[in-house]
Image 1: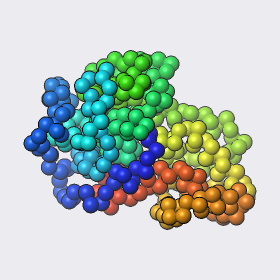
Image 2: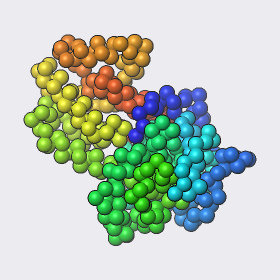
Image 3: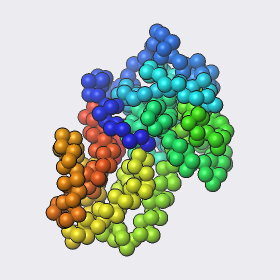
Length: 358
């Protein structure tokens, strides 16, 4: 959910491991010092079922090396937590990517995907950008915490209206092993946990990464419902966009909303709709597709920031023809769009289509 320039900070082509497509995974790390083994003892105390893969339980899955690839290419910050009630302590040391650590994250991701009938390829990119699939990723500026990088507002949204308890009841009534594993390990959650002092509630093991992944699911579903409701309510305003708002495009917008916020997404959509009307154009799915090459426009705006205002004024005056929604968003400071596209391109170059779908 953070607003940093994620690609430049977290993705480095020089750190990409050699890919052996004949194997499902890379070698696990073995760290000699305690500086990077700080999660190992708590993970080792978890029941064995959380530390071995359950591919036969899942409807669909991605290779383990997809998770390892994201973890190795994350250059963000981390925090250590004694328990879920403690205050996060910033550390420069990333956790050791041992067999247990990697399998725990892999299982949590797939159990949530399987329990709620989600496609792991459609969520992979979000976690790679936000946290690199690290349990204790931490943004020291915004206090975004854990594998889902929850902010205070994000946690408030999820825990309001008794949503956690109601969704957990559905978990308990499910016959799927994946749902059972989620419910058994995430623990209770105090409403005061959204304070900065309690951010460890989204980081600490053994409750996490399952708790954070579960909360991410609820947050995503709420964004999807809100987007659908807003489009229907503001149909007259967004009439020029309606034919292009396919399920795939809506999924991309929810992706973007996780960083930008739903209010920001609505503002961008209304602005782009007004732009298309001024051009006497009806938007197509291709116009709204965020998966476009934005390197050039991003490079220009970085080198010459003053051009952002020039371009924004040109849009208002109807002087820029055939502008895509992605380009419109980047010009209006939604640079996360370009980050998503660049990350997808990078993953595709290194691992093909086996990890993500955008």
